[in-house]
Image 1: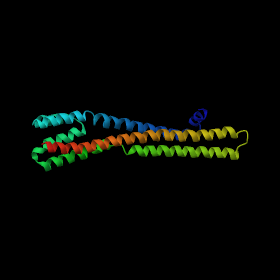
Image 2: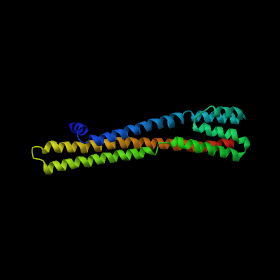
Image 3: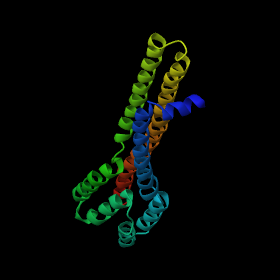
Image 4: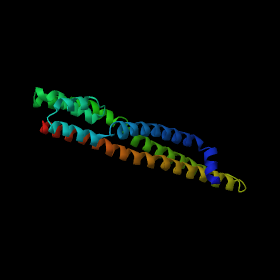
Length: 203
């Protein structure tokens, strides 16, 4: 623990500062994407589709259209496009679905590609701090008087340990969150395509 504290307070703090900034940026993106993908875009999808299916099976197309128009999720926007344009023909409905999809898919995927880049940069900053710490340690062994070597060597080792740990501590959770968010975003996009086709078939 003492070595870790030295690494935070010593010459390696510049690399640590970069890693912390990258971690905070990643955290902000993850929080924003979680709210959009898991809360705003995913909430109540199953209930919504059951209600739409029941109304369509009962022949209540106008009520299903109003229900879809009252929702703000990407799925409901796709279903609303189908219901509003189906009377104009199959081709018109498909064009409307494509238009909504091209609008909503980028919104779902926004900023996700930044997360792996930030994780990799955090690991590289940790590696840079590690190399810097090794340089200090070897320089201490080679050039300092014997009495000063233990303290200088401990300082270099602390920089190595802290930067390696910090880079990994930021990168691993960011990559994990990126995987979870990407998985859910792909699921939403596939569901948009699947449910739009099913609604067309019900009509």
